[in-house]
Image 1: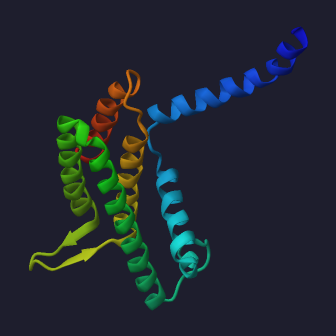
Image 2: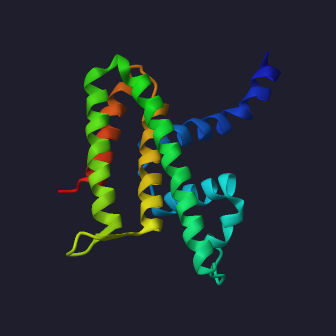
Length: 173
């Protein structure tokens, strides 16, 4: 019996670190590096021909940059729509939380447009494509985080916490 305990005791530190890592992840705030990494990973996965957008010292040709930026944003938007739909279906059992998620997403749209669209006096505008991709990645990050929360006594309080953090991030006033 003692030999079995000794065998399993080597796993205890790893299990402890593993559990601390995942409990920290539900409480972690997103960093700029994580957002950039999400955009890069999506680009690598969906549009490997556009990796030049992220290489230091290599400038894409103007036309390639515009095409790649558009492709990346379309892919990011598709992923956002997919995860938003999943979250809304999953949270159907919590109508108040579902409404809060919808309201935070609406605030996020305003945030994205204020941060990423330059509007001229005549009503014309310029979309900052990198900004849009990063704003979309931010929304995806929070929605994935909401989707990963378990609906139990430990998870339910996390929903409110994540929604509050997301709301403050996109509507700091």
